[in-house]
Structures are given as structure tokens and as C-alpha cells.
Image (tube, rainbow, N blue to C red; front, top):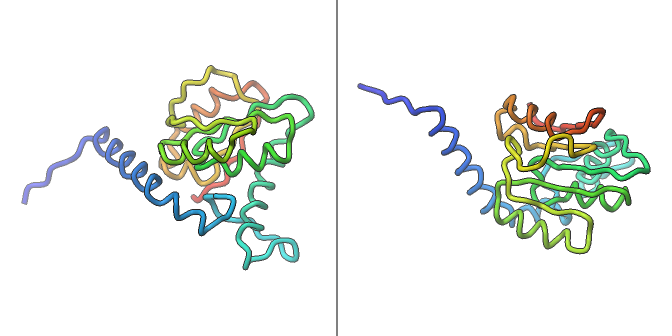
Length: 178
């Protein structure tokens, strides 16, 4: 039996298409998972978060991630790499009045719904690949990636792009499945 190898670029493109299709179709179901449309796992703290109320743990994950950014009192440009519908961005905007938040996702549905949820807030979601964004180098003070880099296979390009985007001394927090 003869096997045919698939060029890596074709495999990567097919994987990207399948991932975009998955998020375009599954995102509506995430409201069941979280009233705030958090699309990640939670952070459990005994006697503080309730394992039977997911949103308390999901928002605690947002708290744990954003507090590690050490956002000060000055203007802070934050980018969420693989932002879903922007729940972490909305959390940061609610708790840090000096944040301007940007998010990137490959899903048209997430861009549309996420920007509706961000209406009136200082944030925007763009349809872009976090491995190769249109942003200028050194343009962000902080960056987060919550359960998103796993979709790139923790590709070196993801970290390289994040590093390019961050200003010198900027902070990056990743909460991901390895």
C-alpha cells in the first residue's frame, strides 16, 4: 500500500480551517459554559470560589492572570492573543480603568459577538492570527494568552510574535494546557 505524505503547509492550513470552523460553530454553546463567555478553565481557591458555580472560578482565572501583569496606574495597552469573545479583556477593562484592550481571534463569529459585548468599553477584537499580527513592534505593555497557544502546538512563532509586540519590560502571562 502506497501512502502519500501531506506537505506541512497544507496540513497547517487544514488545521487552521478546522479550528476556525470549530470556534465559529461552537462559540454559541459557550454561553452555557459561562454567562460572561469565558472560554477557558477556572481557578479554584478553597472557600473563595465555588466549584458548582463555574463563573466564579472562570473569573478567578481572569483575576489570577491579570494581577500577574502588574498593571500600574499609567495607561496600559493590553493584547489578548486568542481572545475568544473577549471575556478576559472585559474583566481587565472592568478592574483596571487605565487599560486599553485589543484582542485577536481567527473566528468571524467571535469578532462580531465579542465586539458587541465590548461596545462602550475601551477595547476591540480583530480577526487576526496571533502568530503574525498587523500591530507595530513594541506597541503593548502587557499580553495574555489563556488556553490559546495550545492551538498552535505551542509554536515558537507564537512566542516570537508576542515578544515582538511587547514593549521592553512588558509582561506576558500564559495560562495554557501543556
